[in-house]
Length: 262
Image 1 (cartoon, rainbow, N blue to C red):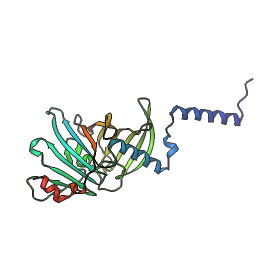
Image 2 (image 1 turned 180 degrees about the vertical axis):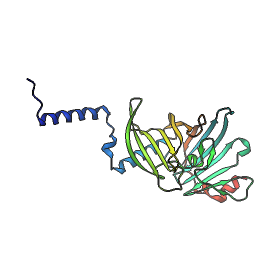
Image 3 (image 1 turned 60 degrees about the vertical axis):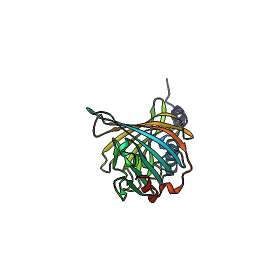
Image 4 (image 1 turned 90 degrees about the vertical axis):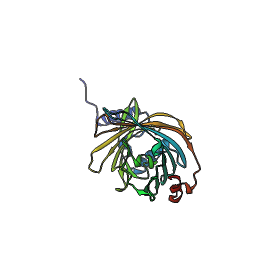
C-alpha cells in the first residue's frame, strides 16, 4: 500500500520543483525576485539606454522613411548632435528645401529655428516631427532621465528572457505619459517599446532592429515605428555614421544656431 509523502518530504519536492523552474530561466532574475527593488529596474533601464546611444557627446545621421496606405513613401534626413540628455541639436539635411531647419533642446526647452523666422519657436516634445516620429523621439537620448521604471514581469521571446518594464513619466513635460519597454535580460538590448497617451490609449509601437557596431558599441541601427491608431502607417529610422564627439557648449547656444539657420 502506497503511503502519502510526509509534510517535510512534500516541502522538499516543492523546493526541488522551484529550483528547476529557476534554472530554466538561464540566470536572469524573475520579476517577483526584483519586486520592490526600484534600483534594479533603474539599472536595467540605464543599461538599455547605454546600448541605444553613447553616454557622452555623439553625432549620428538618421534617414526616416514614412509609408502609409495609398501614398508614396516620404523620406527625410537629419543630423543629430547630442551631449548627454540635456543638450541636443537636430538639423534637417534633406529635403533640400528644409535643410536649414534646426531643433534645439536645452534642459527642458525645445526650440525650432526656421530660416524664414527671425525668432525661434518653442515646441513640445510630443509634437509630430515627421510620420510616426515626435520631436522628443530624436531630441531626447535616453529614457532614464524622463521616466520612473518598474519591472512588471519577464517574457520569453525567441528563447531569450526579456524584462518588461513599465515607465511612468516624471511629469507632463516628457514625450509620452507611459511606456512599456522590453529589454533583453542577458545583453541589455532593447527589443520593443509601446508608447501610451495620458488617457491610456496606445499611440505607437517601436521595434529595435539590426544591431551592429557603431559609436563605440553594439547598437540598434534601425527602429521601426508602427502607428497604433492608423493601421499601415509606419516610419523606418535608419541610423548611420554614429561617432563619439567632444562637443563644445557653444554648438547648443541659441545665438550660434540663429546664424546656422539663415
